[in-house]
Length: 121
Image (cartoon, rainbow, N blue to C red; front, side):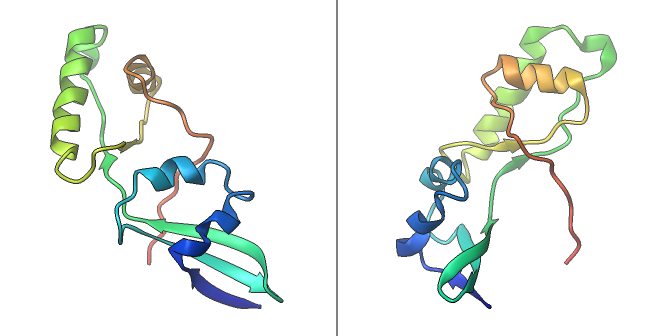
C-alpha cells in the first residue's frame, strides 16, 4: 500500500467515496486543499482532505438576549463580512448548544452529517 497526495486533475476519482466533496471543492481556492489517498495496487482504499477553511468559532449569545432574532442576524452578518477577507463561498460554523444551532439553521446554515474533532499534530 502506498500513500500519496492526489493531484487536482484526479480529484474526480474520489467523488464516489465523498459525494459531498464536489460542493466543497467549488469553494476552494488554489492551494487551499490537498487530497491524501492510500492505494493498494492502484485502487484507492482510503482518502482524506486537508483543507484550509474559514471557521466561525465560539458562537454564543447571552441567555438574557436569546430570542432576539436581530441580534443573531447582526452577529452572523458581521462574521460573514469578516470572513469575506478569505472566502466568497462558505464558512464552517461549530456550535456548542442547541440555541446557536437553531440560529444558524434559521439563517440558512446546513447541518453537516459529521462529528468534529481536534487532533493535536
